[in-house]
Length: 372
Image (tube, rainbow, N blue to C red; front, side, top):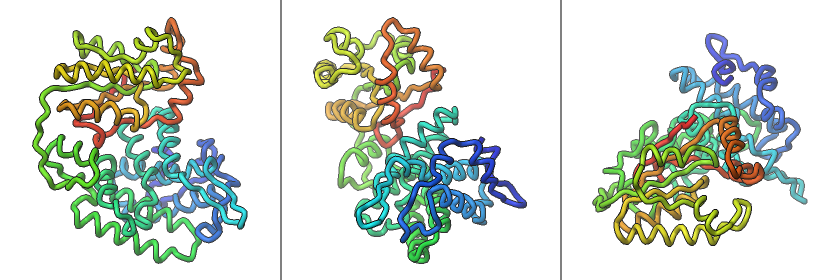
């Protein structure tokens, strides 16, 4: 649908009626109020339409390859998708939407997953949604270098700047010229680092992992890779095919499995998982002390959960390879129903709501696997 609806020359017209008819999440933006100081144009749907038209009017966007234009057009339509969930009307009459970028990443991922978008396309768009406000006030952020280096690994800072430009041009607000100038400074900053439209060239995988895992690291430091064995960490929603993947790709290796521990400890997926996770970490330490390669088999759907496993393994000198397994929603649902003990739908829904696909900033290596 994004390919079909993306404006094309020579007219470059945004068919808003068709977009509104195609996407329920666009219609959900209608009537959602915004702060009048920064969004005098009206509700979120009106702003999104204006931002899409602004993007279509950018000569730089029009000059991009079509695949890239489509990806950016998807991002501009989705950039404020979470505002209905985050908007609050304050006693003084102002309107806030704190956290809509973070929540928007999760929601954009889900929408694109349910639409069966390619993983790389989906994750690029989700990353742009997550960071779409950064260029507005970038030079005020002490962590700007870390942000732009991360974006350079998972998306493109040029795409981020184009999205931010469309976002601000799609508004009626008093500080528009100032913010446009800030976006220009953001572009200059990224260009000086060499990451405007290219990834930062880390010396090796270990240097990249160490930089993003440790505050205060210099990205120019060529960290010595002293890892001596590999730990495989799986990530994926229930029924993504993790057990089958292990049987095929890691036969014979010890497995630290949360499902097996839950069964042994008689803990339901809906119960508090603290004791299960503690038991898994103790099992993992046994293998790590022996420098024994093994597989950590768990859903690990959030970056925070994966970080606990990855950092533990890395602290023992392991090279960590994360495999992110997934399949379309209907495939997962069918597989789950066929299980002897299906995971409750409510538990799966909670995981989907906080699902973050692993990316290359989290481990020495990350591989996406479609298991349909």
